[in-house]
Amino acid sequence: MDWQATFAWIATTCAGAYIAWRMVRTLRPNKTGCAGSCGCAKATTNEIPGQAAIIPPEKLVLRQKPSCTAD
Image 1 (cartoon, rainbow, N blue to C red):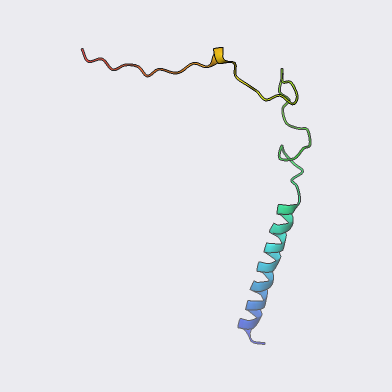
Image 2: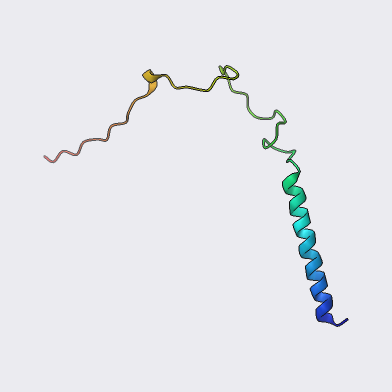
């Protein structure tokens, strides 16, 4: 085998190993940080389980743009 064929086999093997490694990392869940269901996320307070957080209509206010008055 000449050096170009050897280099081509090495490059192909490295590319295949990289693709396999990325597939394994994609399919395996992340065990560090808050990406998984490990319970490390900050617990919210005053939240009823199973009920969506709804903003009461009294707290909904529109922000008004300041009026431009030319004097």
